[in-house]
Length: 443
Image (cartoon, rainbow, N blue to C red; front, side, top):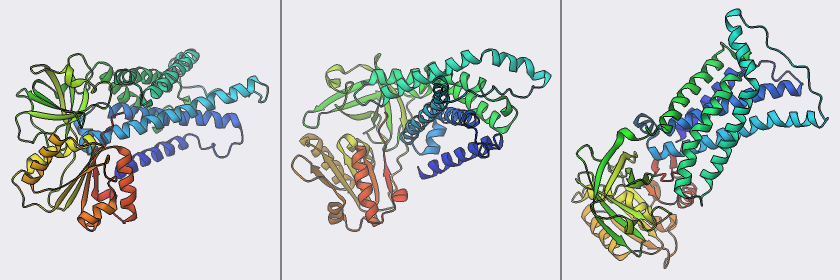
């Protein structure tokens, strides 16, 4: 993740440098409206480019997943780049609106309109056409911005159900396309032919392809497989459902820690971690009742039902040459079942300790987990937070010794992970190198 952040910052620095090359007077001017014009262009360009990258990341392409070490990482970057691009969009909108409001109130005086130098004859018709559309394109961008802002609020509102969340993301592609038209047609004529111009056009073009790809429903289509429900089981104490599917022959298997999107009938696809071993002909999932879709799913799904499986996704690589500490919070235990299945009968690996933490432990699930860890040569610690203190680094150190001798693998609630990494940092633990987590938050 650190490398990816550095790449993004280098890209922002490059864009800023290319923009400054066409606005060399920016720091020398003391005219508010000259500053306004330049910052409107800069914030608009940067917002569009970051928004284009979020569109590309949403395509679920394997090349992107490989580069970012997992689809979960790609979605995390997608989320924060989306928020950043809209924050820049708000800045862009405010720089446009506030001076205009101050002029209307009489606080500022509108300066005489400055016209770009006359373009070459071969360019004049295009420039005249753009100028004629100026008012319409401004309004188009403003409508797209308002729509995007509203959709962002919907998608970030945790209580919004999954279907409105999914629809909001689909409509973001429409808002993005409106903003592309606005941004490209309102680029200053002084930028035409400069590197910043072609860079902006390039990102707008690729981002528009990604947006259309999403709107036409192509996301994940090539990675979908038909399957049928083989069996179901419910663990009432853990409020968790076991689902076993038989996929068609096109399914090429998975690796430990990967997840897949499941689509039941006309429902939208939802992501779930694959629990079964990597060589199993069937695919097993553990699905906890956490939201509007998963609550009551056990009653809705019947043996023989058709299911569409999209995936697998994820790049959690367990390095079995090093001592490891695995930490599972709640349904995060699903991420470790597959690697335990793979390790069955292989006890010649370095020491591995698994800490399973949940608020209420289902005895049937705990018994299965205990049997698996015994066969895999993994030491199991079960922490029921209803009756025991929450897991902390001191307890882990008591059970395992010096935490710096281990690689950590975590899957569970994000706040749990932040608490652990903060405590590990005080132990001078190399989090960037030795702490691996499944960022299983898709909204």
